[in-house]
Image (cartoon, rainbow, N blue to C red; front, side, top):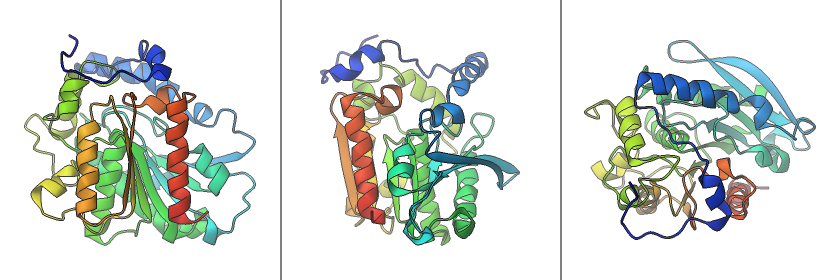
Amino acid sequence: MTSQIPRPPLNPDLAEAHKTTPLLDIDTPEKLHSYRATVHPMFTLENAIRGKEATIATEELEIPGPIGPLHATVLRPKNPTRTATETPGVLHIHGGGLATGTRFLGYTFNDWIEELGAVIVTAEYRLAPEHPAPAGLEDSYAGLVWMAEHAVQLGFNPDKLIIGGGSAGGNIAAGLALLARDRGGPKLAGQVLMYPWVDDSLDWHSTEQFGDIAPVTWDNMVTVSKYAFGAGHEYADMYTAPLRAAKEKEGGLAGLPPTYLDVGEADVFRDQDVAYASALWKGGVSTELHVWPGAWHGFDVFVPGADVSQRAIKARLEWLKRVVGE
């Protein structure tokens, strides 16, 4: 059913591709299994660095997690030109609704490696509904701690440690920043939140306004919320649904690192993301917010060559250069 709420049009550079964009239709065990079997093989290391094999080196390894090893990949320049002191380290968190995805889903950071010499670590985490929140968050926190502790071996400056992710990866990245602050964990130089899922509530105008279009509809959000947070949202708290930190406590986001946050104008998460940016500002956190006109959820991953996608990718890189020093 098409939404009757007035809404801005989709970006013309994205509109054609949107016609074939798949839905996150995983509301039964059979559909979830089928979706994972179909989508996961699309997001591989080979595809992540396609065309960049001459400039990007990779390493596969296991890192310790809360209940067992986590499979991870390190990506770095093949011929680094920067010293370790100059080099940022980035923990990438993959998307997929907390219920699907590989460590390469939503990975768009190759330019960070080529232009900044960044060392990127991206790791698997346990997926819902088999492992509801905070399983994925705790796995990712273990990855963050490991990365910070191995900065010398990995070859980056621990004072230039960044976390980043899109959609569900943005959910976990935002939760990691809160956990690191409250547990006295690794000091973060910044967080990059791309159209992040930061609230467990569906009570947002943008959710109604664009809740009928791919790749994430209202019904899809009901499903993944139940998978990740439980039927009664009993697993949702200020770390697994980070906007709660602002809702439950005045200044609840104070003390977080500088933040880059972007979202599409036609994204179901638009309004909660704008609210999160506002809460960050209220908490005294330096925050750069972009709302990309006519862009739908995950636009840059599905249509990376579109002008609006290229603008978004460039804006993130320029922000990172300012934060870590080019």
